[in-house]
Image (tube, rainbow, N blue to C red; front, side):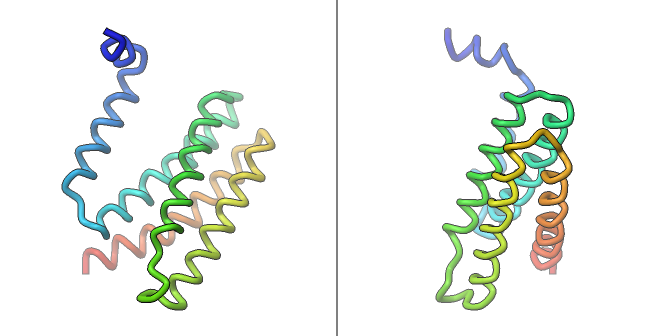
Length: 132
């Protein structure tokens, strides 16, 4: 019964989790990276929204999610195959993570939007490369 009551507390969140699980189940490596970028930029945008509205619990949850995704992206870089690109991405992800953590101390949503915009550029390039 606890499972059913958790579904009723936040049906939108439950739907998002089911949707994400469905999309990741059949995704290959590059598709998973694309999903991580989508989830990451979405988490940062929601963190910005929550910060602007003093929704601290939501902001904290989304910051935690964004930080975890940044760690996952960095941890899965292949430095042997990726060489300089992997090293540059590792520095970029580390910088993004630092910006998110520093922004988490304040109440301004702008830094989260700025990081999301930077990541969106890479996400867009990733989508174009996958489509080619």
